Image (cartoon, rainbow over all chains, first blue to last red; front, side):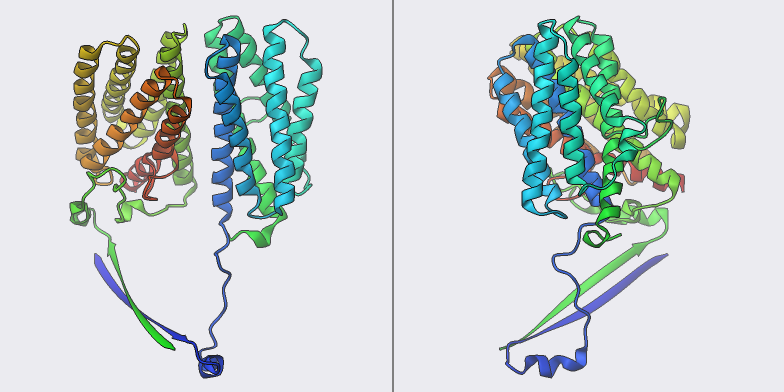
Length: 225
Length: 228
């Protein structure tokens, strides 16, 4: 079946002081403008941004371990990627909170960079891992408006993700490219490319999707269905 | 002041597969002009369809990431190129599994072969650029064009939601952007390289420059419409 529908829409704009009076019989509903972002749009934006962060971190690992010529640019680019989170966060939170959150994710990036250097130099990374985990949790607390992030700590999404980053670094530093590749793929799945089938996640959504759900549940009036 | 504006909006609804070609006459050869508004581009929300869309986005995203890693490793002379090529073949296998759900093993094998030809030739082009072999680069780029044509013709022949001209145009842009990345990295133009990588990823996974659906969306919607 082929169906053709033609809509004719007539706008009438009044500029007269009595325009509202003249128009009162229209009794039209007033909608929000600009339109609210949809829930899925937030989740998609988060998935894209976390995926980008993860790819940028892998490039940092490759470049830092090889003392690459592009190292300074990669660090700068990572900070740009971190700053881009602000435009997502500011759709539902104030810009000051968005800026504080961006600083937290930048601290996380710095911790990962310090971790690469430590592994390269054969130094313990225990304290740095704790710092990385703390910064990431701070970031998540901020972007979710201090909603409960227990879904992200049990099972331990954040620490598992950091463990995969550590595996990427250690494997590549030993030229175990197969091990590195598997760690990169697992890290991608955890952060933005779920569902995650490995234990203890057993089919749960990726971190970005869960964060999107937490945010849209915490701020239902900021998003349309 | 009083102003009256009249808008006329025409909706066209197609409900028979044979009607789809009527909508294919539009120019889809211009980069950034691949969007289609026929029924197969509609959003389907069954759990199976949602899963297919998500798998398509994830798997094409994975392929983009792998190619980006290959660009870096080839231009830096890293030792993991062979491993990345093997993993890239695995990524294409995952995409093939999606095709298999609708077109069976024969269709999936053909799809994997044709996509594999494109990525293999693209990787060879990148290596030739790194080796500064102009004649080989030219020869391989011609082969890349042929490989892209073959994929476009195949997809266009099996599914009206995958018009050959659009597939060819998207893959030409996509591969060109990877060649640009390699050239930019060799010239130490890091920012331009990342910009090209982002554009390639966006084209495949996020959306087209004109706001039209990404190739991953087109791919998924084609599979969904064929499965109905």
